[in-house]
Image (cartoon, rainbow over all chains, first blue to last red; front, side, top):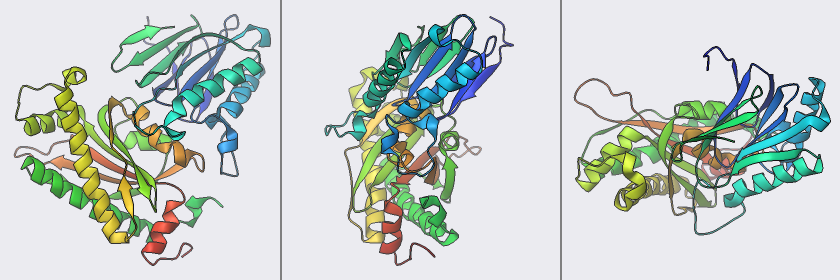
Length: 165
Length: 213
């Protein structure tokens, strides 16, 4: 592995796209979900760091599309198609949606991680994008890095080590 | 209307005072508990992006011991008490009177975990009760929850309420240090107070300041 690979960083409630040999990463996913949509043949990938399940929760006038599962994925799809990705080649991988804290009272707010995962999956299915692998749930934070060259998603956690999916 | 636009410098000063009173009491409690001198910085009130907020606590991947609790009552919000691992280890060693304790084995050490949780409980409780006295608002803490993980993963959880309204957070941040006899120590703990969006006007009104000054 050379250290000259350019890493594009995606912040919280943000999205971006890359083309090999660039790689794309987002750090410290907790209840948020990192969704990667990629074209294995064109070696193009996009990552969205989704914070909330639905834009109907929004109480702001101007919506940040990257923040909500239902607006982020369709926007990411549009960006990838604009870059020349082929719709039928698109696949998805996802990670995150942990429940960082355990409380006795299980309000909706506390279940935000699993709700984010459900919303992301629902939207991918609706858009006919096949989910190849996922590492979701649990109670650990994750830092993820996707390499469009290999289509591997590397997941790093504090307590559970590192793995590729 | 974006709630950020209604915040003036007078409001920021009030929030700073809230941090000062709350963290002041918490630092005193910590100092008593550990029988050590604790230094506290002047509170910082900032309007920051979510990413900037992670950076305030050492970046999204920085590993910390974090105690999180929801503030319930008249002005709901979230509160974090974040400690660098080294500092958390030192505090637990003192509390348990066991200098061999290593936070690396925290997962298997129930006693250490509950000590840390209790520390969070005492500190956030004293922060909140002084805040409640100052504003005359009824505020009470949820049971605190503990996690040792990346800053991003811990803090983003407290942003869920806020993120439905804005891409910015108003953070009342107070950093503190254990006073060292030698050189100034860089390791810092943080209190983050994050009122829910609707709570700001309730807090300001309780203190006799109009919303739109």
